[in-house]
Image 1 (cartoon, chains in turn green, purple):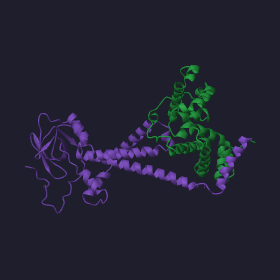
Image 2 (image 1 turned 135 degrees about the vertical axis):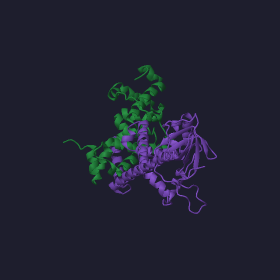
Image 3 (image 1 turned 45 degrees about the horizontal axis):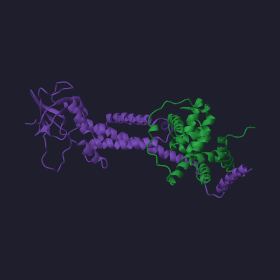
Image 4 (image 1 turned 180 degrees about the vertical axis):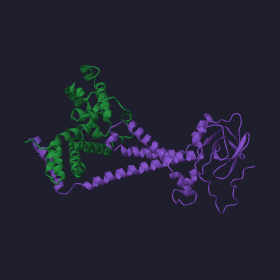
Length: 190
Length: 257
């Protein structure tokens, strides 16, 4: 018998099965910790922040539509929580307006992009994440480490899908520019 | 194993906090109410914007400013100077708020800001234009002039009573060879002189009873017209006279001297 989906478990929690929420915590704990470590960039309290993410998810689970995917919904809560944490500690400027979200952009080929150089990119990203601008870091992490699709990243960050593609593409270029070793190994672009 | 115990710890910590009541699940109605409030906010904002924009179109039409771009570059300059900038600024402010609210909906945030902003602008300007075609503002202005509109009365009396030095709208009362008289809604009578430079973008014939817009500077109740246009009637009666202030300013049917 196959294990229940995240959405089925979330439905059980909504019906009052609190213990079932523990399964969701188990399933997403490592993902959230990894996301937090890359987003919050080595903060010591990242485990506490992840705990807050799960507590917020529990508090708001009645607002989750079980016809949609649980994973982007949880990542959205985590995204907000991480941003709030960074704002609290004045490490992130309050975003006012991002021109990337203003204009339409051609969408790059998502599946091909992920397949080519995926391993190399993951390793390079792991080493050089700190060299990237904040706005490029998160979509790259969600795409290459958390395996979310462009559409799911768009849901998490609440930005246009085409902007996700642009940020991933520009993030990779920035990674190359700021990591001469990578440029030497992989040429002008991935 | 260390990984497993860490794994268990976070789950247990979260469940323990839930059991101890340190965190409570928000009821479903909380989210329904939140969505309803957001939707209500959007609807109220849309209605407000439609009102403001349609009022803008209405006052432009009422003052005659709407028609002056037809009189050439000079008319266009007067048109831009005479636009109801306060209403336009208010509408833009509310449109910004509306855009911020609709960006919470996937339909809006999945698309570039430019698309949703243009969609919002087109919809509200088109909607405002359509509302301006209804008798809504017409009726509200009449109520305001009769002091029967308690809250919006000053707004309508202010915008409805606007006059511009270069744009004059009225009904033709008397026609001569190269001049004619018009009577404005305020009751004043203006003598209009036609010269060889006068433009007639809407046709030449002017007869008594026609509603006209005259473009040109008013000097001692006389305009040397730069442009004259016959326009559709507003079907608005003359503004009521205040009963307690002085003698009446005009007597209907009596042409100016």
